[in-house]
Structure formats: C-alpha cells, structure tokens
Image (cartoon, rainbow, N blue to C red; front, side, top):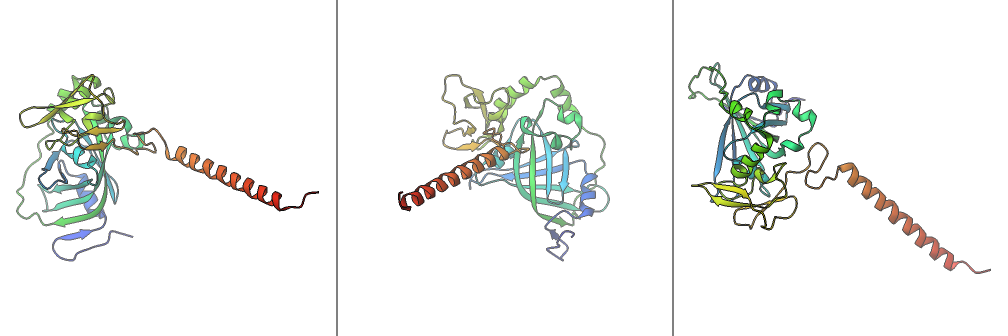
Length: 289
C-alpha cells in the first residue's frame, strides 16, 4: 500500500514518503536539519547540508552522513534523554515550487559503530574522509508538502570543496582531537558526540569557555563519567553513548543474540531447578520401603 494522505488541502501530509517526493529528494543539492534542546530556554538549531550525504533507506527511514564542523548541536539534541526530535527540509530552487519536510525521531551512529551495509549507502570518498564523524538515522512519522511559491529561483553552480580539502590534510587522530575540542558540548552546555571519539574515548573531558562556545579538552587526573556516558558542562547531566548499531550495543559490547542466549540459559536453569524441587517433594510423599 502507498502512503496514507492525511490532508486534502494545498498543504498535504502523509505518514510515509510518496514515490514522487522520493524522486524529488534525489535531485536536491542541499537540505536543512532542524533540532531543539528540550529545555525551555535552550536553543533551536538549523543546519544546511551539502554534498551527496543523504539517503532514503525506505519510505519511513532516512539517514545522512555527518561531516565534522565547529559545532555538534544536532548530535547533542538527539543524545538528550527523552529528545530525538528532528526535521529535515528540502526546498525546490528550480522547476516547480515545492517544500518537503520529513518529521521524525533521530539517533546518532558514531563513525566507529556504523556497519558496512549502512556505509555502503554513501559515496566512498565521504566514508573515507577523516572528517566523517557520525551518521544520523531518522525514523520518519510524518511527511508534509507545501507550496513554496515565495521561494526564489537559484541556479546550482558546483560543490564547495573547502571542507574536503581541509580534512584531507588531517589524520584520524587529529580529527578525534579536534572533535573533542569543538564537539564535546553544545552551546547550552549539553554533552555531545565529541566525548566519544575512538582514540580518546573513556578519558575525562573538561569544558572551558571559548567566547560563546563550550570547548572541551582531555583532563588527566580528573574523574571520568561512568563508562558509556558523557557529561554536561555543569556535571549534572549525563548522556548515554549512542547505542544499538548494526546488531551491537556500542555502550556494552553485548549483541542481542548474546543477551537472548543468556536469558534462555537462565530460563532453562530455573526450569531444571523447579523440576528438581518437584521431584524432591514427590519423593518425600512416597512411602518408604
């Protein structure tokens, strides 16, 4: 069955991505990402994304490959307990007017946790780029289309390669240190993905003020947060390490099959114990010879 239409007005809403809009997505050169802190006085963040980094996995699932930058607001919001709200917007700058929004719940997949099937959905040069820090996975629950009649025309010229050229000069260890510095905290002081970099993970990170930003640095001797967690600037809020990825819980190392095996083993052991108790009781009730 196709997507269910939720509205018959000029603005249309669906519960999944229609085929026509999936084709529209493929032709776009830019999209916008919106997230927000749950706090009433927290900030709302909107980020533009370029390069061929977006993939529609199915009608209700999409993802984009996230390259490093001087902030990590989206990741901080998605890692926030009880949050995960995210909106992706595509906008037609040529041809027929169209604004497409994908509303959903997002989660962060750290670079080191992404499995091959997921990585294969993105261009090889982006996957191998030292600036690649995470993949944002989104479960879509609402799709809306509006007119975009007031959006001006723009002609696409070419991609900017400044970011790729900059990262090409760096080693992975260099980028991990950069992300610890620039991506450990949001502007609201919430923990973000910089605290889970592969070559630095598990080390205590402290915040310091950087003219309107909270930057991070490794602090030898300082008490680290509990394993698998990142801590806010004030030390009061913990964010769990982005977890279940490709069948593996990244924060514990346990796979679902391992957990299921343990549960089954415990169930069998309890059943055997109960049978033994029953046999003992029956044995006591039988007359002795």
